[in-house]
Structures are given as structure tokens and as C-alpha cells.
Length: 309
Image 1 (cartoon, rainbow, N blue to C red):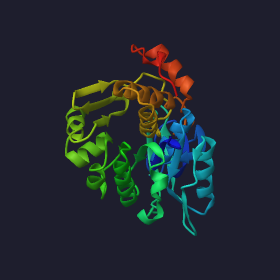
Image 2 (tube, rainbow, N blue to C red; image 1 turned 180 degrees about the vertical axis):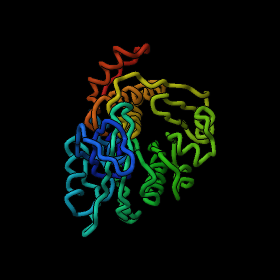
Image 3 (cartoon, rainbow, N blue to C red; image 1 turned 90 degrees about the vertical axis):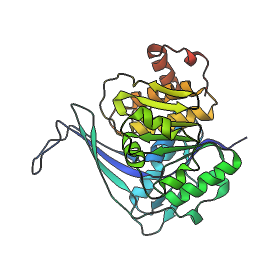
């Protein structure tokens, strides 16, 4: 039996978030409506979602030995994410972001630091990577992600890639990915494709699924059986920060449970929607029972009657 449902390897950070009445112009002062500090980062937040949903999650990443690094680790541990495989770099500055949320729309602008912390392939252990039923990666530590994904391939462990934007190493990582879930930006950068349905179809070639998430417009995903559409759930949006990260985390969680793909995508969409009702990338992540209750009231499909953690 695997020690974890999902192992995640990738980016982690501290998020400083504030809601403002409107996004300011240059040289304008705007009063902050609400403020929050919490853990952030693409894959780190995805693993927090796995843990909040009741899954067994482990995170592999890198932080500095500063207060930000300590905060990143403690925030993951709050959601029962195993942090023993996190590498600490002495004297380094950990990653952090300033996120400004526009109150009328819930959309956010992110300012982040390029700390220079990179997880080297020599710093990851195969036994940590293959300890889960699913491997979840982003491309922030590209070389380490490629190596980890190749190990997962060798072990028959499905690899889920949260492809937010195209970077050096994206093409190589794509060769090892079973479920490639991309943003509109990635589809445009990587494929030169602006139509999410066509992009999803292209991304599915040679793998189990390709998908493109389009925020409040939903998600297109494709398999060898065709292209499918999952609309976004309508909720009162407070903040969209981390919605994609949470979608990917919920997807990997559900995949580890062996559900049908259509159930997995709808579940992930529901979890991401619930997240958007609170400030911060993690505050609104629901528990499993809360997600099921939401689906019970919103979904025409009755798979929520039999899914279990």
C-alpha cells in the first residue's frame, strides 16, 4: 500500500493578500478592505487541498531557512501535508507573493519574488517521489519535475501536470505527463491555440487526458473518446486566488480514488468554486463532506451518492 494518495513536487510560497474596493491607478492610494497572510504556491496549495479533503498528501519542494520558509512548512502541516521531503537551503530567501484582489470581480493581481531557490534533481529521492498513488507537478523546478515524472512513469504512477504557463523544460515534462491540465495562457504559449476545445484535444494526444481551464467559463477536457465540457459552478466570488491550484489538487485527490474521469472533473470544479467564496488560496478549500453537500445541491449527476474518501 502506498504511503500517500498524492505526492506533489513544485512551487511553494507565502501569500500576502488584500482586498481593495477597486484596483488602483499609478500614484493612487486605496484603502484595504481585508488582509490575510497564508501559505501559497501552485503545488503546495494543491497538496493543501488534498489534505483538507481528507487525502494523504506529501509535498516535495524547497525553502530558505528564514521565517517565510518556516511559515510555508507550518501552513502545510496545518492541512496534514507531510513535509519531511522539503529541502531547506541555508541563507536563502523563501518565495513570497503580494496579491491584490479587486472586490467587485474577485480577480487578482499577483506580484511575486524570484528568490532564486531551485530544487536540484540531486536533492530529491526516488522513494519520496514514488510514495504516492499519483504524482502532481508544476514546472517551477523543471529538471527535478522531469526526473520525478520519469520515475513515476517507471512505476506506473500517473503524473498530473498543472501547466500554468510555458517555461524551459515544458516540452520535456510534457513527454512524461499522463494528465496535462493547462491554463488558457499555457495553451496560447505552448500551442499557439486560442480555442480551449481545440487545445484540449491537441494536449490529449499521446496521453490519458488533456484539459484547458478557463476560469468562470469552466473547463474543456479531452480523451481518446472525444472532447468534453464542464461548466463552472456559479458562486458568490470573493477571491479567485488559487482556484486553479485547488482544482488541480482536487483532481489529483479524486484520481487517486479511482473515480470515473467525468466525476473527477466535476468534483474538482466544485471544490475550486467553493474555494472562491473566501479570501485566499486556501481559506475556502472545503472538507470532503462540504464538497459532497455542495454537489448534492448543485449536480445533476448523482455520483456523490457513492464516492468515498
